[in-house]
Image (cartoon, rainbow, N blue to C red):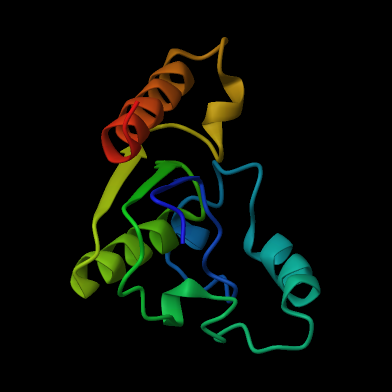
Length: 134
């Protein structure tokens, strides 16, 4: 396993059943329930969307390295990121969760143009240096 993991807007919910698929549908222009229902079968290759090897929301995260999970507050994926962070925390593994209010899916791609993106990347770098050393 790696020494630490940073995930920007990770996709965990292969079933697209989290409530933010509804509450953020009008503001998330990148990810929709329909998009997940289209792409998940390609990723799953015939496996169940509840298979823990494909859907970490059904996995046992015990023993994972420290995780930094970030997502935009306007993402449809927000709920699944929050649920996975809670699952990791309950397992006793270390997790830091950062939700950027008003930000879209993978807002870090706007680095150099969006101060929140620059701040998130700088924060991830600082966090990684703390976990892995300089």
